[in-house]
Image (cartoon, rainbow, N blue to C red; front, side, top):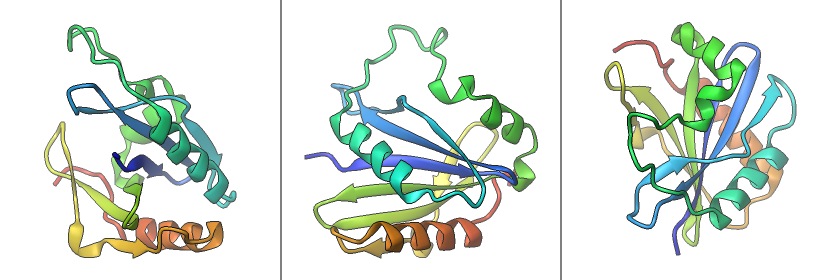
Length: 149
C-alpha cells in the first residue's frame, strides 16, 4: 500500500495544501482538490482530507508532457507566491503504516525541489490532528524558503 502524500506551501498570507497520487507507472503527480487557507487558520482537518484524497487517488499519466499543466499552477495564490519565492516555504507530509513523516523541502535548481531528510519529523500513525498541526507548523517554520539556491 502506497503512503498517502500531500505537499504544503506556506507563503506570507496563505497555506496551500495539494494531495498527490501515483500513476500506474509509479510517478507521483499533484491532484485535486487543492485547499487554500489563510495563515493562522486551522490546517489539520484540511491536511487530513488531502491525505485521504491521496490515498484514494490514482493520477492519469499525461499523454504529452508539453501540454501537461499541474493543478497547482491554476491556483492564483500559488502563482502569486511562486513569483516571490523568498517568502515561500514547503514540506511534504506522508501518512503510512510506519507513521506520519513531515519533511521540509528546498529548491535544488530552477525547476526542481528536494528534501531535507535530516530535519524530518515522524509522528505515530495515529497521531491526533492537534499533534499533526503542531508538527507541520514547526517544520514549516524551520524550513528554508524556496528561493534560488
